[in-house]
Image (cartoon, helix red, strand yellow):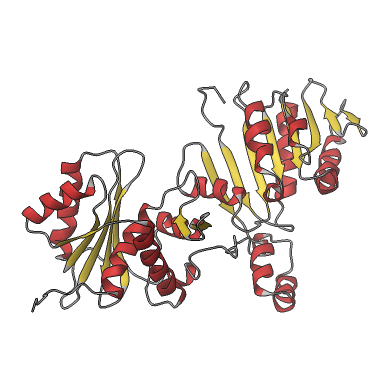
Length: 385
């Protein structure tokens, strides 16, 4: 965008009709206008915007001196602040206005360009705020923005509220919906869950979160480490898997430290768990680190990541999670990476497994490397005849 200002703090909500998200957004728009600010209520279409516009008008009528222009779908306060309802069916029509607040209603059903190319720039001059409210719709761009808050990215925050959190909705009505709707639809519309798309790589991630963290080795349990290296933008992740329980029991994730400290962090975990094998990526900077670790006496097995070897590792891990052959600790970053992971078809017809643009897959790869040693154990002794 050619600007140096930070992204506005944005509350990202995954919700549904019935929780009260529309009332929340309308109240924030009115409050902004009362302070002399400018706000837009943006929906995928004017038809979708009708519910928000109705609540905005209802709130505005309780304020002395307010002007309501039905044709423009606009409310102007006595102090000069205003709220206007707009449609995102043509993202280019949203350009140019300086705003203090934008509420994107049912944004999962909008084109991403409405936010990135039109609405986001309109907030820069005033360092405005944004509230994204929507029923989930698979793992589209809204899901990735929601994940930004979960992963702790600066100035983003995320919430998730199912219909049952609304005290004014009869729980019996929710139970009727559960009985009469397909599970996938109920979970999305009433539980506000981002359901796996058809192209989702890892299924059953939440169900696999049954492992308990360990701080030291348990006698007679073997351990495997998976290590995916990183330094600046990417993260180094060390995943510890209990081979007997077939469970992730510890993770260490860090970045922006030099290689000597990375080896030291690995050494700390090594002393705690005394792993039988450490499966570490050997690409690029991995090879010299592995060489040093071997000189230190650590049982490191190199893993050369190619599209073919990565495909094999990812597919083995995906099958293990789907069959519940592996247990996961409820680590938010690990879960987020697994749920967002994608498979893209290359022009050659082969699949390429990767994280979505702007996200990381270091936890996924670290876990996949560790699982390789459990699913396909490396021989300890090789005899040549």
